[in-house]
Image (tube, rainbow, N blue to C red; front, side, top):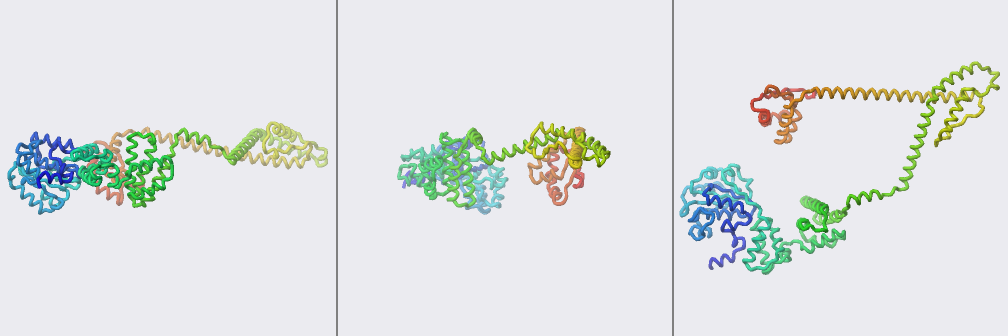
Amino acid sequence: MSENEMIEKKVLALKYRPRRFEDLVGQSTISQTLSLALDSNRLSHAYLFSGLRGSGKTSTARIMAKALLCSNGPTSKPCEVCENCKSANAYRHLDIIEMDAASNRGIDDIKDLIEHTKYKPSSARFKVFIIDEVHMLTTQAFNALLKTLEEPPGFVKFILATTDPLKLPATILSRTQHFRFNKIANSDVMHHLSHILNEENIEFETAALEILTRSGQGSLRDTLTLLDQAIIFSKGKITVSAVVDMLGLIEPELMEKLFETILKKEDVTSLVKELENYEISQVCDEMTIYLRQKMLEKDAKFDLLLFDRFFRILSDAKHLLSLNSDGLFVLILTLSKMIEATNLKSIDEIINQVEDIEVKPAMKEAISVNKVLEHANNDVNNTYNDAKPSISSLEEEKEINVENENNISLDSIDAIETVAPIETIEKEVQEQENDFSTPFDEFATPFDEEINLEDNNKKEESTLKQEDTELNNLQESNINLESTTSTEENNIEELEEAEEEIISEPYDPSKDVYETLINKVYERDVQLGELFERNFVYKSFENKSLKISSYAQGDERKFLLKHYGVIKLFIYDIFGQDIEIEFIKEDPSSR
């Protein structure tokens, strides 16, 4: 079998693997940087490539190794015809040593690798070591590699590749040039897929490639693997329906029908039965993608507020699914909430709706009763205020009347007519009654034209008792008013004294600097910042001496002592290195 036949039978990910820096997809910045380094001969002894799976890390490492070993190199454009380039393309060059750290992760494997670095390359100018998935090495293996990685022989180059650089020790990261491979953009993946299909003479629909690109999630290798499956499943013509069936996605027509039903507020029971055959999490993802596409297209059927509500509802649904909730229930709840969310009303409509609310009969009766009672209370108060000036005159008339009664004999009782003071009172009361009317007229009883002396005395006594009661109430209200006024005056005096104290207190700029210290401690650790602010209070800063009142006790004091080194470092950083720190212990009860 010839080499060309072997290439044709390879999967697309291997058949179209990049062999030049120009062929790298979506990593133009990295390819340009490495090309310039090769052309200017500014090479590092160790490189680290990190990024998403299928983003081109290993392919770039192999291209870099070939560029270093090319007979015309180091160069960014290997000749592809010399023995070194041919051997590198066939993955059989003796001076390019690849090691899978996932399966060779022990210290013994690293010792063998270090042993190889002692020998010069067999045919090329460099000996290149490519360690893939380097984060899988053990701690002992990393420690063994440190010295060699820091100062390798001049003919040795290391290229490390990993998907998780956070698992690498800082000592390894500091000894390498780190290149971060980005997630490949969907547009670049789409362009690469269409190029491959044109080369393979396979018909395709652009929408189908969009679905494949989205499913690959930025990994070119994963997308090419899906493309291989789609070519086989669709029997030579890649269509949207074939790709949707292959990936188990929701058909676009069903998604259109779903949102049309939601917007029309129709029953979604039949659609729920169709969607329960899919993964509910995948349904939510497909709905999110559909809404995102409609937002980009600025579809008139969807309002901006509606987009916001739908995305929030779908986010809640994903959260519920993450808690292992029942998928079908989450789907029904989500669709019901989305239907309810379509009830959009403008502010003007809401205002008009509020203004059009009718007052119920019971409410009207309650309002009218309240108005009547309020009017009656006002009339009674007015009546009392009008009659109040006669209280003092009534007392004087009472004294005169009592003196006259003492001078009257029992024989002349029948001949006595209405006493003058009583007639005066009757006229005054009668005139006041004619001036106003109240809903309590039954309490205003007119005097008879002729009454006997005993009835007059009883009525006068009852009237005087009522007047005494009213006078006492007025005196009590005056006393309460005077006490309230004095209390308010005392409060005002206290406020004025406090303001004078605040104004008289001199401004200390170092106090603001101390607030900066508190904020810096908070940034380091929230718990430490809370304890520092609660227990350490600024006292003064004079002559390069910072005095701090300490109220710390018990566990809080132990915690602050444990972190005193950090606090002291912050104090020196903010107030200066040549200051003295003095903590003055205070009684917590004195605060």
